[in-house]
Length: 420
Image (cartoon, rainbow, N blue to C red; front, side, top):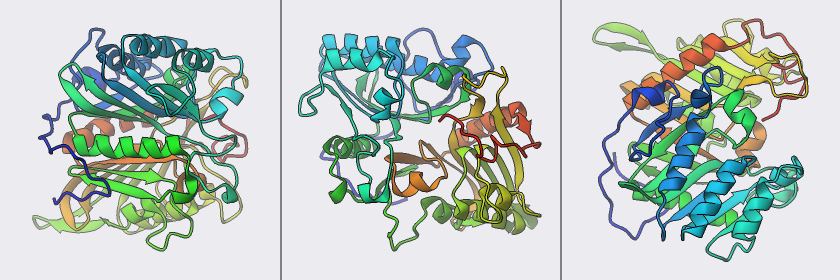
């Protein structure tokens, strides 16, 4: 596949490290000892041991600890409420690592008693022209969203490490915030890219745009470096090209096809915290009716007569559905168990080619604000083994989902709010 990019790196291209999957990471385990960063997925398991719950967090802590003096760490995170992570970044800064963070303003206003931001501010400062800092997007606004469209957020969850033990130009794209519930109650995923100059540069350029907060000059963008592609949001509501990135992806699916004289059906799997974009719901229904096998695990839809995504998805002939939104302890003051991941898996015929196994993951919910208002990133991975690891995770999430198919509930239908 030809390399195409909206960004250009001044450094020469290098070969990617061999893709590797450690069995422990597939199960949501993290090594206790520092290890060379490798390309592949990491999953937490909120129903498992503490180590399994904190697999993504542990990986990030490991990478922070590996970062040598003279290197840099950049991260854009929606909510950062983890003092141990803050201490690790403070220690990295003290040994000569440049640490730059961009957070949503609600990181402070939603949880004013949490000391994490104060620790980061004291250690890094807030001057975004400096080598290290912690910055905030404007109140009730993403860094790059058009304020005329109403409230928005910086919903990103990615980390960039310029150098680690045996690796460089490392990107960690995750669905996980840094908070106790994100580990112990929410199913999350992360995908690690190593030694990839093009993708690292694309994310770094996007991070610089977030720091600049110049929403008026922002343009929706994407970068391709086969087998990866990343999309950066928000996307203007008036975008004349296919206005919905996700429906554009789904338009490339062929549901029924013949291979080796055998009729086959493409499988579409979705694990999604919030599925409230009607166009996406309608497309998933259409794919099921066209012969695809569409399987969806979600936590929140919306309900509103025939225009709601809950009603649309539950129409006759629609996809298989399971809701994971469970107040297991009966305490409304604690977070419910949910699927917080936001990934799409396609197995079959995609973009005219059979035998495809492709995944998309990141911070991007299938909601209206995620498309046109929020700061978000969506990563495409065209690697069979990565797809298969996500299928294993999908199967585990689906098996754990409560209320499952009995999803005619206020929480599943979005009538009552669910914390993201």
